Amino acid sequence: MILSSHRRSISRGGAMDLIFGNVVPLVLGSLGVMVLYQLLQRYRQRAYIQDAVVVITGASSGLGKECARVFHAAGARLILCGRDRARLQELVQELKEVADSKQKTYTPSTVIFDLSDTETVASAAEEILKCHGHVDILINNAGVSYRGTILNTHVDVHKEVMGINYFGPVALTQAILPSMVQRRKGHVAVISSVQGKIAIPFRSAYAASKHATQAYFDCLRAEAEQYGLEVSVISPGYIRTNLSLNAVTGDGSKYGVLDKNTAEGRDPREVAEAVLRAVGRSKKDVLLAGPLPTLAVYIRTLCPQLFFKLMASRARKEQRPKED
Image (cartoon, rainbow, N blue to C red; front, side, top):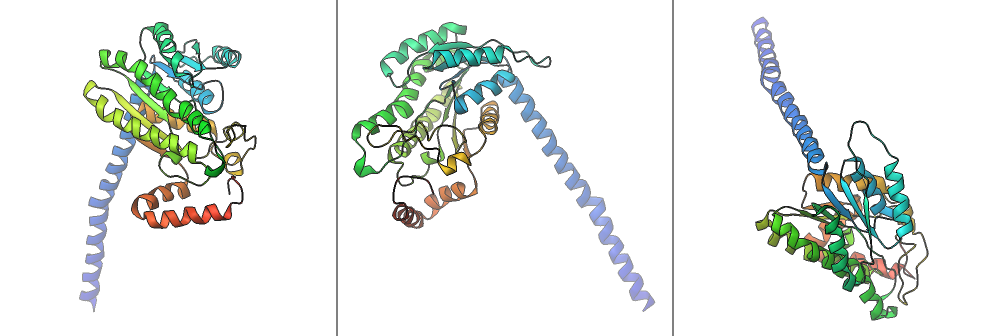
């Protein structure tokens, strides 16, 4: 009995020696590597954004305005684009008054144009390029949402939404792209949506525009890689902005309602910081959605029949185009 007890004691001692002698150092080493990796990522992000010429469309409000704030704080040389001159000037004044002794910042430039008017985009791109002679990072953020049933939506509304969400960013990107190719340096980012990966009822025009956006910029990524260019598609879920208030309906009028899911969406500042990280770390495709939308994306890919049934059920439950 004494000998057996002694053997068990030795066995336990050997197991503890194995744990503390091999496993614990391995775990601590792995944690150390992870911490070092995160530090290197943060350093790369700061170096990537500092002094970079960054163009942001739709910068006068919502996510675009928050992106302007976080990229300015990171030391970017901003070119802010939008239709509302007064609101852009207010934002410039706000950013000029922000002082940070630890970070060099620049007074932003502005270029006023309507992204939906593709005829004026080429001249706007020329004005953008004149600001600093080149563009390092183009963030296609401007967009419009939509609420309506397919049966009651005029085709002109589909054209309007596609014009702002798809053709506008495509026109601006293709106007800026040659200068990036010539320098063999540049980064194009686009703010898409989780609805560019899945389609839900009463969002046909919006989902179609975002699906087209996802496809175009995926193609651009593949084609531009040979020139050393980066392309990021960033797909948020609901964000707490005025997007639903300004959404168009089937007859072209404004929706004018702050949806429940939008009101409870992510803080735009939080999303802007995620955009900064995605761009600064050259992420190719980023999904910024909650657990349910993320699960829906996987269901749509892995079990499409189930997804179709779920969406049909949702459509039946909704008596009018609104969010659950």
